Image (cartoon, rainbow, N blue to C red; front, side, top):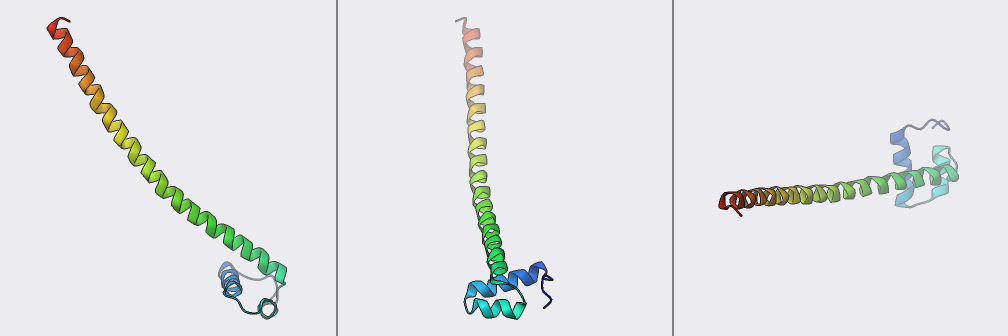
Length: 95
């Protein structure tokens, strides 16, 4: 493989092979790269994975918050209507 000519899929494959274990020096030699490069790619890979998983968790939490907001808005609407009914009733009764 030509040094510095890796596409995204190739980088992922190399990083995954390195994560699986085995001889890092041999992996780097086979791919014509330095160990430092592999470790930089691995760090980027792990950070991106962490971010993706965090976003997924945040998305779930966000959906829960949205559901709570809808429920509270529904309750506020019901209480507003009840309040208006009570005011009308008081007006009709002359209170």
